[in-house]
Image (cartoon, rainbow, N blue to C red; front, side, top):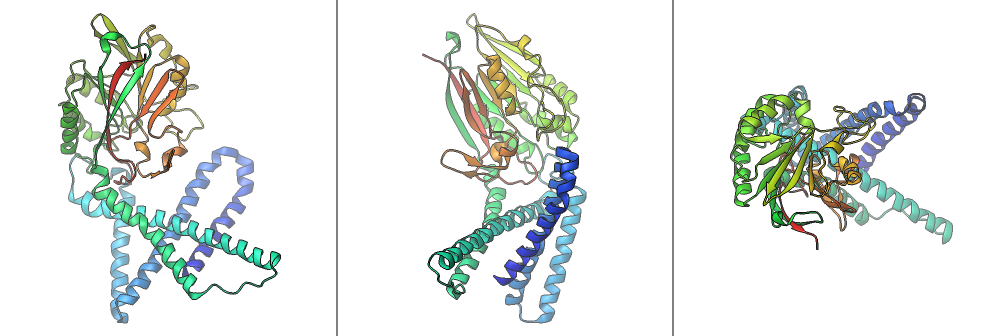
Length: 445
């Protein structure tokens, strides 16, 4: 535990010195500098985490190999492999998972490094929190014994030290186990979500109308075209009347757009296949081209546009928008707007149900103000890696939206945030299963 404490003292001291030195700059330059400070802090935490785990791995090797030559050889080989994987992946980070089929490069060079980074970073942070909690508890105990009962506390017992050390490293090892599960199983463990959706203005002719939603496919080596075709078959088995696709068809590879469109071509619904675009379509500059590819195979992408779905003399109004962001939000800086959904008022139809397809769930507040009955969104991946709590979930996506996953309602307006199917950055899902959602529309009585 002594080595652990020393490592963390150095890391925490470094971060505190950095924060103290940066304070005048923050005051002078304001919010604009926070992004740079955050980036530097992430790099510092990354370096501290790698040094910490190198030491732990070295200690383990020392116990397994008694020969000094063997230990040196093992350390040298491990560092060479680590350095190769790290520099290879950093050089091609945005090309990760390129293509539409699993490759040896992705399986042998990309996935192991991403699994290691996921486990080492998260494990280091958990151990740090554990260590801070232990220090706080010891300080409180010392103050209680010293100031209240005038008893001088002795050093912690060897048994307590061993327990704390074992508990700390159990915390640190948990992300490696969770990451392995999420890589090999969790990201493929599809869940089909069924929900009866009550809408006050639903025409009688659409009672029981079924909408199937797919979102955030992120075609890549870790979400192949063949896998997407499997999800298409599952969606068709759900007997949809209409299919809604809510963006992020590609990840970083623009050349994969044809493969994802072809994989989705097998979707079948009597009232049509409709969709909107996500932030990764503009990041890869494929908004126009993928829209044309979808149109060629009969799927209509709604880009600030609407489509009427008619049955028995009644109609539903389907609206779709491109991904939008507002200055100052932690969102992708493209399609900037002063308020979400500008100009959507002209697309609304009175006295019937208006359904919005918007990749970004943050448009929901504005949609509720406009009286849009039902919004379908994605973008968050349900957190992708999340910890379920009794009434919520702890997930990185909470940094960008309060609408992380599932069902939300404001007055008569309703939102469903789909957990999506693909992954981003780390090909791992934990606590956020991939999802196909089915909505059966019923009239509110």
